[in-house]
Length: 133
Image (tube, rainbow, N blue to C red):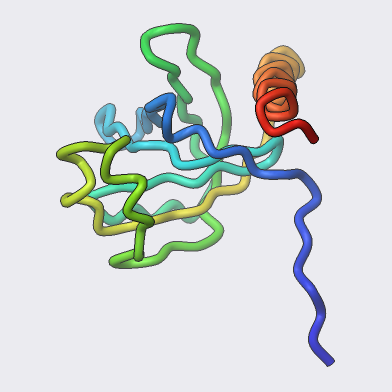
């Protein structure tokens, strides 16, 4: 029997906004964020990353507010096949992408969660208007 995988929360593609994920535990390394959800985040990177426990990171949107989240790695893919449409968005970074990784988010602070939830809600409403769903 094959079970269909379904997500608890929808993912929203945000790569066109060019957000970064800053891992303070890796000497302020920055990674490009592909998509986000209420409880997860997917990044693209040129270097391999392995997180075995929750790490505090910052999600940054083009110099605006940053969002403090805690992530743990769920999966990683080496040499991912990326859609050609990402080449335009990522420009020179496209050729350097060697890894794609998925992380689960956990919040330890209510204010951090509410701030993140507000961002997800805003993105949801924007896409709802854009795609008329």
